[in-house]
Length: 92
Image (cartoon, rainbow, N blue to C red; front, side):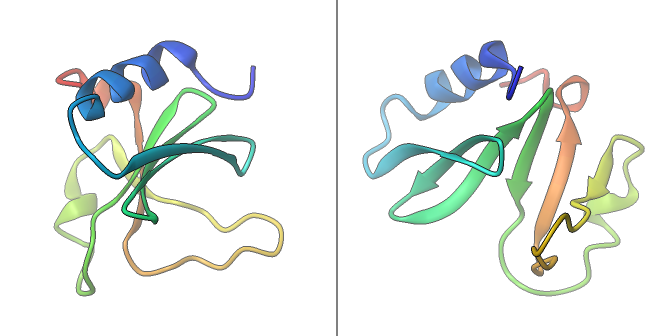
């Protein structure tokens, strides 16, 4: 399983009325682009979301289910990259 299709379906439902949203397979998962910018994605069973802007991510990461996206391979961690488990986003 490259990504959780059930979670991807929930995200599609959230974006279904929004213009400028497209899906792209990336990083072994599925990425949702908003106006050609990476917005969020699904990797395995995790929801990944970009929190936007620059600044201190400590407040975003203070919840027990949020964690920074670890760099893998040749990637570098960009400011604002976050990862959450599906349990932390039951409102999607």
